[in-house]
Image 1 (cartoon, rainbow, N blue to C red):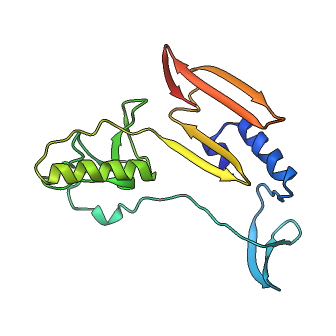
Image 2 (cartoon, rainbow, N blue to C red):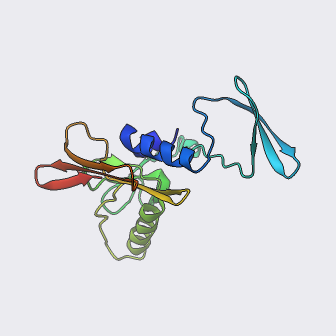
Length: 191
């Protein structure tokens, strides 16, 4: 269920076929009820389908930024802590970085929370410089996801799902290879 959030349906179908070709069992909309030890493996029990033995179980749920503790502090919070171009909050000498800061999105120009490592690193660099008295503006970040699944690399960048963009795509399932570029005018805004 993660892949449709980082790539489109055509890309997800390619990944699904790649996984099936590599003997990976896929269950969609399945409800896991238990994970048990089973002779060196893990037995996954599901509500409406049979058990599954696995050598490895990976569970990923995404992130939910912890901002509740800022309630009543006076720090302005929307999807994240609202910051200016120097990553300062509305409260003097309070900065925000990483998955709690609404920094500028390079593609849209709008505030966005990009909970990814490169953004957190750049936020930290900008905040550190500003706290040390070197005024440094944050230019923005690019939303990106890169995942490797059974030696198949999957990546998305920018506004890869923008319905208003002009789209150019190519599919070569025998490789497998799928490319999708999204343009607004002469500007690449997503891939």
